[in-house]
Length: 114
Image (cartoon, rainbow, N blue to C red; front, top):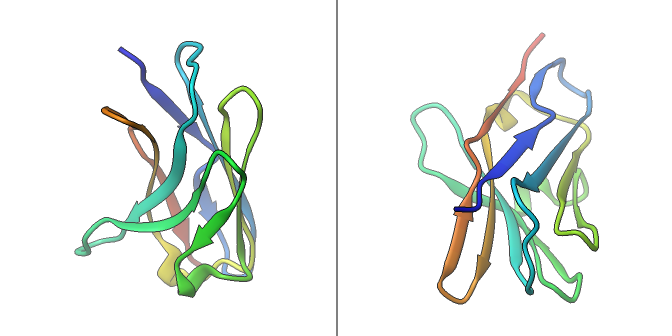
């Protein structure tokens, strides 16, 4: 069973930056739609950004211009987060989807606070 392993979360002051990474526990093959989701305190999980195998990316409006999603050729996924705000505080999850395959990471905590 493939597991996704996230890293890069932590505590950062408003205006700061973090870079999240996600990697599969074993080598996987295929073309996956990859995305980052987040779930803030008392909120539902929401999609933050996604990237197609072609490299085309989509973002939720509230992170446009501040977050950048990227992927490499060995199915690693990244999320560069700049100009972080307290409302970005959440557990961030990575997700890989391809046909019937749907993998989630365990989540990494991002806290934006002074």
